[in-house]
Image (cartoon, rainbow, N blue to C red; front, side, top):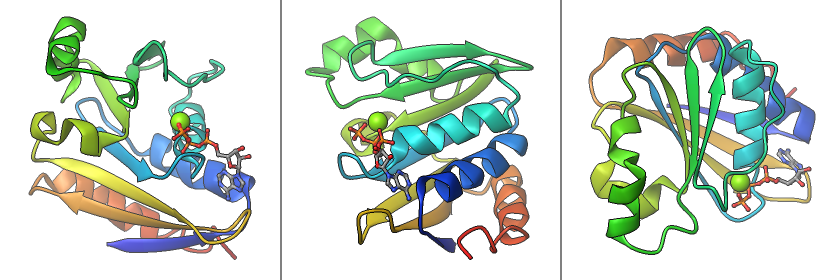
Length: 160
Ligand SMILES: Nc1ncnc2c1ncn2[C@@H]1O[C@H](COP(=O)(O)OP(=O)(O)OP(=O)(O)O)[C@@H](O)[C@H]1O
Ligand SMILES: [Mg+2]
């Protein structure tokens, strides 16, 4: 586990960017945090770090947005999912994990049963207008996630 304390949106974007630079297809990144905590902001950084030039919009209504770079990046927001049937219709489980890309999930707690064992979870806790505590945790035993966590430890100055 590693904890970052960030003081502004730029630092959150930077953390996302470092994560994006170290992802490999098949990885699942779960973003937890209250409304407005900064999950989509982190995703913007991840998309940028992945080398994808696209403008990221929140998939709140579309549920899944797809970006294409050196691999695909699926951005899922489960907030408005109303029933298990809707998840099946959307084929959400096909992205958990995706064979050809990385998956970022906002509100993973709403699809807990569908989450793969191996995944990275970032939990964002707001404690001021701009201040956020971001807890990064590895689930499962896939060494790729541990490697990513070690890489993040080299960037623990992000919140300074
Ligand atoms: N340190 C910070 N990191 C990220 N966002 C910040 C920070 N400080 C302020 N903000 C502001 O908080 C808001 C975060 O919005 P964002 O859409 O990323 O949240 P979210 O967690 O995706 O919300 P939702 O649950 O509605 O999808 C933005 O308006 C951003 O400018
Ligand atoms: Mg969001």
